[in-house]
Amino acid sequence: MKGIIFLFLVFLTIAINANAISVASDYLVNGTMELIAGDSKLYGIRLQNPSDESTGIKLDYDSTFMKAVDYKEVYALAPKETGLSIFFNVTAPKQPGTYVAGYTVSEVEPSGEGLPIRLKISKTFNLKAIEDPNKVYVNQKYVIYAVMVLAFLFYVFKSKNSNKSARSKPRKFI
Image 1: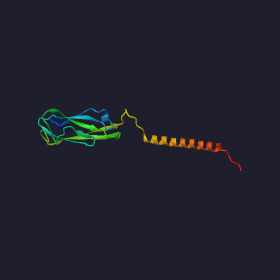
Image 2 (image 1 turned 120 degrees about the horizontal axis):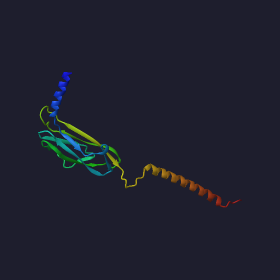
Image 3 (image 1 turned 90 degrees about the vertical axis):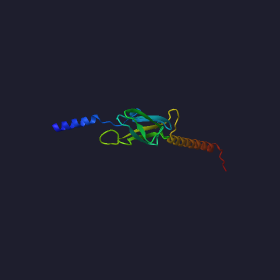
Image 4 (image 1 turned 60 degrees about the vertical axis):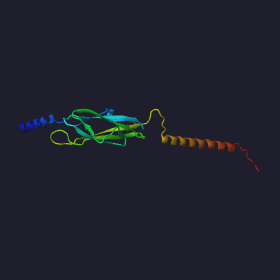
């Protein structure tokens, strides 16, 4: 038992000096960005370096729905830097639905003292493309139903009129 407590205290002492890059991002309700289909919006993240040494950060992102504004191959973070902002122009697809977009931030070189570890942080969020509430949309299946009903009514109307015209003609007797 004493060994476990001693080991715990050693790990606690080592953890006090642990510094790692971090990423703060814009708040999204339920992790979902909701946009009208085809529209765009800026989404921002902030890189933070709490260590005493500078570090280089590489950014990878899903280019299907996102495009980084002022993209760089490597972002240099100074020691104790707490807010290097990167913005993405997020564009919703033309088809309504829910899609997944994401990005990955990784260290180019390990920073800090001790065991060299290259950290990588990945984040995804849902991108919900919705129909424009200011437009009227017609569902194709309802159009088909309406055409079928009109064809039926036309048939019924035509058959009643053809019966009346047949009865109204005078009959010839020989």
